[in-house]
Length: 211
Length: 130
Image (cartoon, rainbow over the protein chains, first blue to last red):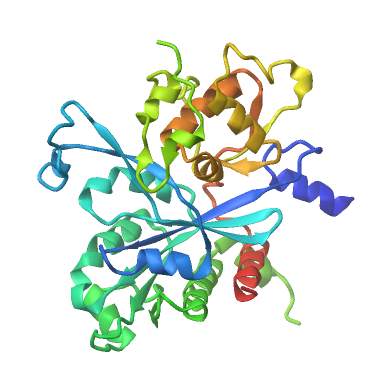
């Protein structure tokens, strides 16, 4: 009974008759073609998700706007996947479009997110600079996963870390976005780093006598 | 401007909706209650005893589809995915249902604070088991 009650309070206002469902989100960022879609598909149940893109002047020249005079929004498909951790705990992966014209979506997606994966392609490393800047500024925990494309040169993760000027607590690791085991390592590395940075439980642990 | 009730067969996921997205909301683009639900907000239908569950005047086929999907707690993102409606449209329709007391929000946004290490551990174990 005691544990059921503490579950209920965790539910944030859930009534007793409704099973508690918690959903968390992890963002998958990186430049165009860095492998976001591949990564989401490798580890999660991919689901179609449409969202709106506001067409601003930033999109003019990139999008063909002929014949759509006055249209200010268009729908775009997002990379979206669901991982069922348990019947009451879901983990969602959202691919964040890297292009500047999608930036209005970032704050909403980042709000309350557990953390983020920045997928890097060593051939176009600068493509992930905006994502790294964004997550550093928002203090959202993230890992840099260097997607090992078959035809790309291999770099040591430490070299990439220096090139990106990452803080020491930001993990950087090689990955193959096509492989479940590799993507699992990326996500578990992220969750472990979030856990390690979680201040309150650490304080609780340090208050306990050593075993 | 009456809501344009069309069902899902007019929507092709690969092409986007054939009907202009906000036709199903009667042109409204902002949720009536002003609340922007998070993609991972959890909602659930309120039992039929409220009497608001099946109002044919105020509820379009899309409203009813959302009501059916939320018989069990469900996230906004999953509703959008299952209805093939854009997220913004789902938010407008959900706000209508919330104002009608037909649906309530179980969890609006994920906590601003990180979840406890017990939840993180559960996520970690779940990922490792994949």
